[in-house]
Length: 114
Length: 258
Length: 268
Image 1 (spheres, rainbow over the protein chains, first blue to last red):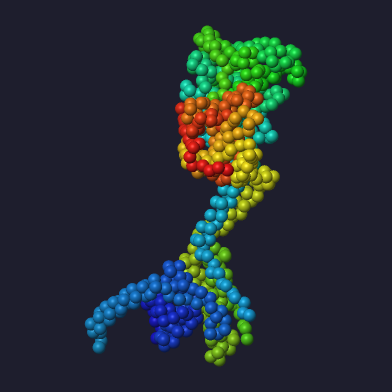
Image 2: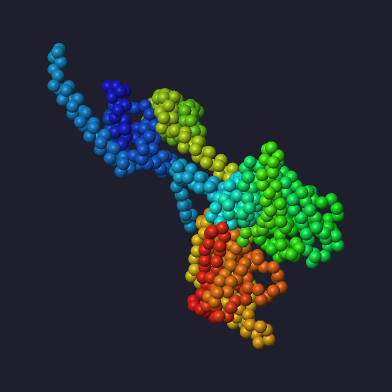
């Protein structure tokens, strides 16, 4: 089931930071990992990943460096910084609160036709 | 043996901009130093000369007169007043490389002399740059006065060469000069070079020595130039707009303040 | 096998073209192209044809202009333009320095100090020489004056009249490199000794031949960026003098520096 773009937009930073929190990755690796973990539910437009990564780098949340990837070619890797980890915690907490309250509202409403 | 590859991380852009700014500042200062630390205006150059003269004073500039071109450089001749205590002459040229400033390598000249008590101080100066021969150049004589209502002045003096000079034509020569007021606080008189042969003329020699009276290093020559080793006396008559003589002052030509 | 797909280059070029500061574009283009290559190779590995892989990769990237607009919002041009301007300023300053140096004929004024009083023979047997290091200091018009070295010379030749002099280095320091030599000091410095004798400035001297004349005289001798040196002398010193005080006095401004002739020195 394709997910509404609007729902995706707000969570991309959280998703990217979570992936990087586990270890350094390059761009396509993040896309592939995201698709794998979400059973292909999350298939964001790949071009939109890089503005997010570059913005995070400018804010000092991630750091980039070039290294040889497992495919033998040199790629630009990203690594999360302590500031990035702090932002991740905030975002995760925000998400947890948001989803808890949404669930609370949705579960408390009985559909009329049921 | 494996070659060591030292990867130098490129500097961030703000750091590079800061380094460029620093490099530009250093290059600019080097250019400023090589060009002889010129001042940016004749007045600025005067202030530096006043500091070098160790007098802790800033004079009032009564006149700024362009002089002749010197080596294609513009020159200025400033007449300065230091209250009632002293007055000065300052000559400077726009001789910095690329004509970007004044008085490069301290090429300016600054002469100080005490003011007389009678209401007028008379001093002679050869203009800038200080000449060594009289060709095509003028002798300037300034009368610093305390008569603001005067619009015209007449200066007269007699130069009596010392006997020890040895010129065959040595004889007293009298001068009478007139000037209209151009600047507040002073009258400027100019005297052109005499027309006769300069080589054997005591007239031009004596006039040149008169011009050097404000130079502290000409004391020994001054003493042997004028009769009695005494500087000549000038008489200045000041006239108001109606043509009436309002004051007559007799004062010796000023000599250097040391 | 290395694939070079033109449509990938086009997509990356169009996306990066939104970035206003041109030198920032190649790195972003390269990163996007590498991403598309990785996706393309992954699709090939799954068994897709090259054409299919290319189509799917392009579709997955999304709209180049949309990505480009987002990149432009992140990669602002201002620091880039400032860097270019800064490089121009450096280049122009270097050209200015070169032109000014050419204009002065590459004739740079001498810098640094040479050995003071080279004409004095400190080993001379006809004179006694004492090196003094006075600790005096004075300030005037931003200059700090001191006498780092003084040489007290006593001629003890039996054939000639006794004669004493002090040769000394006068140093002036000013924090601004364009201050210049404090010329006022050269024509207005005089001295007084402990006995009460006056040593007037050489500028007041009327006869060069008079050796008995007491005077303070000398010349400028070199400068560095902030320091200026004069080599001066006090001639015909009174043998009874225990100290000499240098005096500067002009238009109400004055300072003094004292040279003690009895202490703080060593025989040459």
